[in-house]
Length: 489
Ligand code: FES
Image 1 (tube, protein in one colour):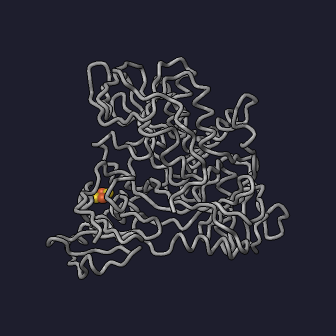
Image 2 (cartoon, protein in one colour):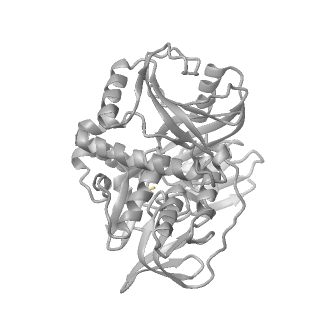
Image 3 (cartoon, rainbow, N blue to C red):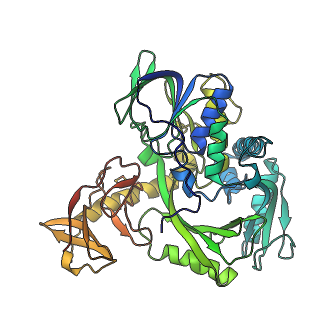
C-alpha cells in the first residue's frame, strides 16, 4: 500500500539558499501551484514558486488524473443549494479549466503530449435513472455538451448492465507528474524544491515568508496552493474543510479502456494508462475503515476477472461542506486554493485561472462563487453540523480506557494500549518491532486511530494522518505525534 502508480521524477530544481524578493510567491508545487505560477509568469508577473518536497509529490501524485467537467452529481447538488446560476458558474469555471489543460498538454510543443489523451467520460448508474436524468438536465442547462446513454451504448466498455448514464465527450486523461514537469519547464518563473514555507508574516510591502531552512522571501502577494492551507492559520480551515480518504490501485490483466468512468452507485472510477487499469474508490471520511483497500480490489476482480495489482495507494483529499472549492482572497495580498472535493484536475486549473487574475487585480465572472469567505451555513449547514459532531466525538474518545498492553499486540497489528499509565497507540511490525505513539492528535487533541489498510494513524476530526512512528504525513497537523517509545519488545 501507498506506492503510487505515477513514477516520480528526479528533482530538477534547486533548493532556496538565499533571501529573495518577488512580486508573487506561490507556495505548493502541485498542479494548481504550477499552473498558477505558469499563468502569472506568462502575464509578466515576477513570480517564485516553492515546494516543500518535489513538484507533484503531494496530492497530485495520488490522483488518477481524470480531467472532466462532470463531477459526480455536483450540478443537481448546486442547483438545490445555490441555484442554477451558481451551478452554471461552477460549470463555466471548470470548462475554462479543462480548456486550459487541453491547450497546455495537447500543444504541439508539450513534452507530455504523447501521454495525454482526449477521452470520453461516462457517469453511470446501475439503479438511479431519475438521478442521472436530473444531473443530465442540470449539466445541459449549465452549458455542458453531454448526452444520455442507456445500457445498449456501444462505446460503454465496462462489463456492466447499467440503467442509464451521461456521456461527456472530449475530456482529458494524462500522467500528472509528467504534465506538471512539462508545464513547469515551459514557465518563466523561479522554482525551488525542498523549500518549505513555515510562516507568513505581514510586512509593510506584503509578506515575509520564512522557510524551514531559515531563508526569507519578501513578496507583495502570496498564493497558498498546498492542498490544506496550513500557512493561513486563522481562517478556520479545520472547520470549513474536512478530509476524506480514498483508495486507488493500478492493475494488469484487465482490458484497456479508451474512456474514463465514474459510477454514482458505488463511487468507483476506472481509466487506463498504457496497459494498466487504474481503479479508485472506497471513499470515506478520514478515519479507519476496515478492509477498504481489499474491497476495491474485490470490486475490480468482480468486474474484470483475475487482475494483478501493480501497486496501490490511498489519498487524503480536502472537501468543502457545500461542494465548491475555496479559491480566492483570504487576507490582504493572501490567496488560497483548497477543497477540490476529489476533482482536483479541472478544479486546479480553474483555481489557477482565478488566482492568476486576482493576483493582478482582475476578476473572472465566475470567481465569486469560490470565495473563501462565502457563507456556507445555508448551502452546507448539514455537512458542517455533522463535521462538528464528529470532531466532538473524536475528542471524547480520549476518555476511553485501554484494555490491552503492548504484549497483546501481534505482528502486523495495532491497538490502543496502556503504556506508562497513558493511552498509547501501538503497532507491531512484521519483524516484531513495536512502534508507540501518543494518541492525542497534535492539531487539536482528538484521539487518532489505526488505519490497517494504509498502515497509518488517522485523526477522525480533521483528517491528519501519521506514520506508525508518528510522523505527520497529512495536515492540518503540522507536528508529528509524539513518539513515546520504539523498541524490539
Ligand atoms: Fe484536528 Fe486531529 S484534531 S486533525
